[in-house]
Image 1 (cartoon, rainbow, N blue to C red):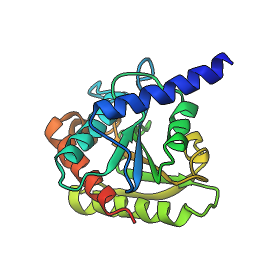
Image 2: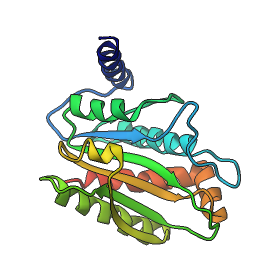
Image 3: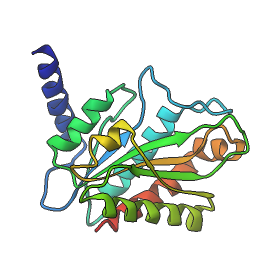
Amino acid sequence: MKKVLKNVSFVFLLLKMCFIFGQHPATQKQIVIDVGHGGKDSGAVGINFVQEKDVVLNIALEILRLNKKSKTPLDIFLTRYNDTLISLSDRTKLAKALKADLFISLHCNHSDNPNTRGVEVYVANTKSQYSNDASWLAFQLQTEFKKQLGFKSRGVKFANFQVLRETGGYCSSLLLESGFLSNKDEAIYLAKSNRIKILSGLIYKTLKGVR
């Protein structure tokens, strides 16, 4: 019972936060942006000590800012709006509770090889009615990162990550690894606020084109 109450409270809390940020349910497609890691879970740490949890939160908040300024805003909800640790299951529960049309999980990559670089986009490795749309959006993101930002494209990949596994059967779902914090150039890029604005703008533009 305590676990059920905790999950219900989580959903209501997130919905309340969405309204605080000026968002509201509408007839258009609803997008849940999963802001990876948070709290005690820093995620990857760059060679310049930038933390993945901070980078992806900065990206998500910038997307919200752009959305608020748009004349035709999207219905965007985040799984976290600050430095808070949210369980993977609660992240996917939110997407289901909101009946999201799209779930996109934001992350940064890391490798033992400091020369490894580029962008990876993952979709669920189990087939569903949403697989084609998820793959289409994943390829769009890959193309835009390479064309507009000059990031190396490491391809669209298939994986059994929990957030993909638990949302892939309900909506288009993908996980974006936007560069390697273990790579000097990309770590420096992702630590600069002006670069985050450019990167976020690219993601937001791509989301606006979701079918």
